[in-house]
Length: 320
Image (cartoon, one colour):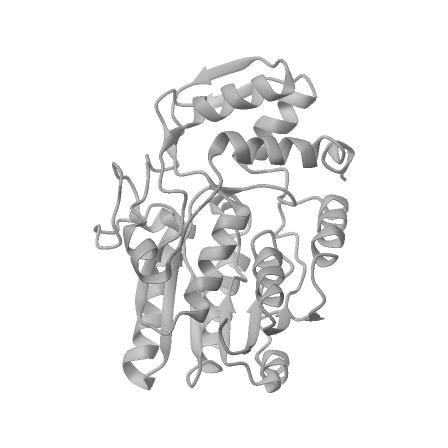
């Protein structure tokens, strides 16, 4: 077991963040959460209220309710004096940024600068995205040329370069994480897997944008485990794909969900050209360096998600 450390997690009340905090605490690390509990302008307030309530029940860490764009407040939080900072606070996906680009840029760029300024003498784990690759055929290695499409992906890639520049100038240690298509309990209802599941449960069609379009669907517990491993790893200044490592079509996911639910109409549409075409990511580097071992395949992960969401469906169908 590693020596107990102090870890500050930005976005620790989020979908991935609360699982990261939970796993850190299970390893006896001291954690402080920084989170402003925002809706990003795309999540119904009532839905988020219920989700954060359940997420925060899973850990005991103190939560500091501040915006990372408020440097003075963030400076005060850093009096916790963390050994490691895990930076998850961000607009969560491209749609959220498209709805509110000004706030997206502020959070993802100004907020990151504030975190970097306060992390110069610490280790930083920056959560990027597989979206930085743009279009690719899998399995994509970390050395694959990045050609991000869309403001969200462009800012995530810019963030990676900002982290590397702070390391160059100040000797800051870092690891960069590229997750993909994370799903599971306590997620918002506006991502693709959540939409498929909710629609199947409420008798609405599951609209698949492209019969051959693939994603590397990753169960949230596996993603959180990879992030924790990167935070505790003695090595630094590396980029890691933290995914399931297996490309599955959107149509696969829709079919598994309709089988679980016992019905549902699937409508296959044309690919949405606002999004790149993706596939599996290569996780060999994370397996070798971090001993990363994702355990949950899509069938098992969707079954777990179904068991969770079917008893909470009213959160998503009555949220205002």
